[in-house]
Image 1 (spheres, rainbow, N blue to C red):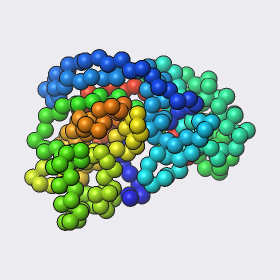
Image 2 (image 1 turned 30 degrees about the vertical axis):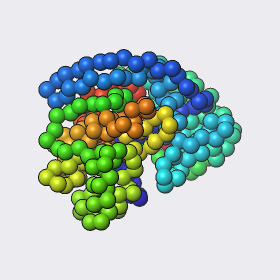
Image 3 (image 1 turned 180 degrees about the vertical axis):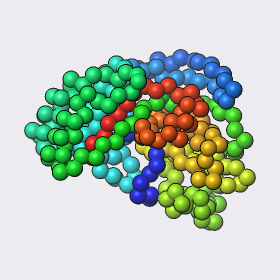
Image 4 (image 1 turned 90 degrees about the vertical axis):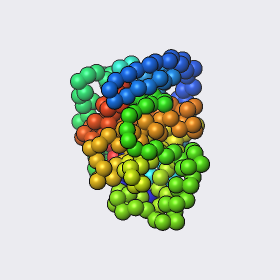
Length: 286
């Protein structure tokens, strides 16, 4: 598995196992690049973040972060905060000392909600100081959280191949037999097993140009990961792969999330191409 995945992610939350009743609304949108008729889950921001928490992390019985919900069993952040217009949610890793966790909890409870333009959390320095004082290091990562509707449509010349289909299964077997193309292996994918399912590949002239996959997957949600081969960058192929991924049958009962680092301009460009609504921002301290 790649040591560092260039994926769109980052989220967690505080306590509780929300099981909101989703209200579905049909919405038709058209633009020069997109044309979509989608049924979107209309959830409150807090419920929405709680669903992503259950997707991104494995939690202890009392709601602390045990680890990332990925096949690699990666350690989770020591502290995570996500804000939306309705409020905020946060999480603290299970091995963080209880007295420090109580102080983080008290500070985060007073954190203002998300507004535009995007600004850092008000208590950022206090969070970082508490984590550094306990662990000796406090690496900060800032994310932007987009809502990802189902069944997006994006005009592209690429062929879309999804892992849910018979064609996708044949494609995967072919890659296993032939080995990973150089452009894909340069991104850190050694085998088809590194395409965490379900996935959707955008193929141009028989070559994988971009691939979208489930960076995190639970029974209620899925977090997108997407990468593009360098030779095909800047051509909207990440947006095409993302649109194909959002239409995969196995994802239709799950809430979908597109989260990217605030410094990842190319990922934000793909979100803009697809017309994804920005619903919040996140902070990780590891």
